[in-house]
Image (cartoon, rainbow, N blue to C red; front, side):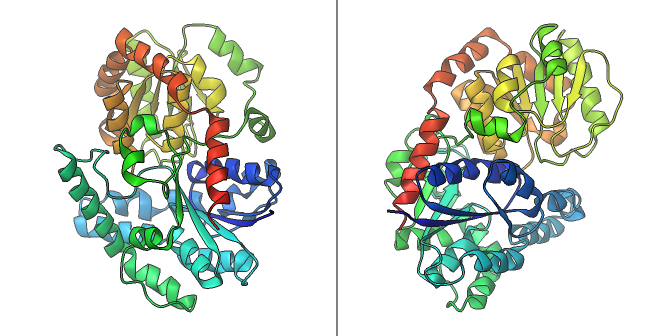
Length: 419
């Protein structure tokens, strides 16, 4: 039976692209799929043939704003908390209005699908129009005993997660209830995770259970584990990114596999310093470096052993590298794991430090706060992950991961059950 899905996807490319793989799979299965993405990612979804609509704020503009680059990094804790509160609900009014236009009439959508960003709005709209709701989560966001955020046994972890969930609710409660009021719903009195579980909503865990042993058993069938989501090779070709091009291919072939360095959509405060530290650390170790600028500008001088590229296709480039230095976003973490190479995670915030810790627990990486990742720390970190035992562990881990096509299929299966 054909189902009418409406995807409302806020955030950066790492938040949106994995969900687009599922939207494409649902459309291939004959379902009616309407896709809304951040305005700056409409072109990306168009190249995949999805006929997207712009919803919510421009994520590139947000990440380049003083709110993110300055206020969230302020030494004043009150300034940081205010900034986090603003970012947590940034653009929700616009997102609600745009999503209502796509799925606002009763009967116009069977299932509303959202990511972690904006799921409060997506869930409220689904409730308002009597549709099913499903969320795609690229990281654990429920209380659990399996994923460590502090030293200590399972009970300590569960308490720490509870505190974190309650803090999130305190930060977003007023904003979420403003959205519910605008949609004609009564204010919520409990945090979203509790309400989603009570209503039987599906929360697809779009990351590999290999990294979080024990968690699938804790959470049960409402939180099915699909694995890391990724576009197929054919869909990546449609983006025009799966080909190396003669020049980059020749450079990769011209010497020892390089260290990949890329921070995705994360704002690099001082590109010149980063390039200088990468150049010096890799030179100290006799290595080459391939830097992907992502959403940053790296118009700086560089030595011969360093090459700077724009965005690259991870599935094509990373298997030809010896290690990766990255921000620890779920998508990049997945791509590095699948490439079978070790990681140095230079984390900024949110889920990134936990991914760094999980990679360390798995024996395939190490991590350090991005602001502290200077020449010496980078050299030490690279020397650590390039030890034979770590490289072997990374290579042995890759074939144990759920294959991308299987993960996308499992996620689509779960969304079909969301009604």
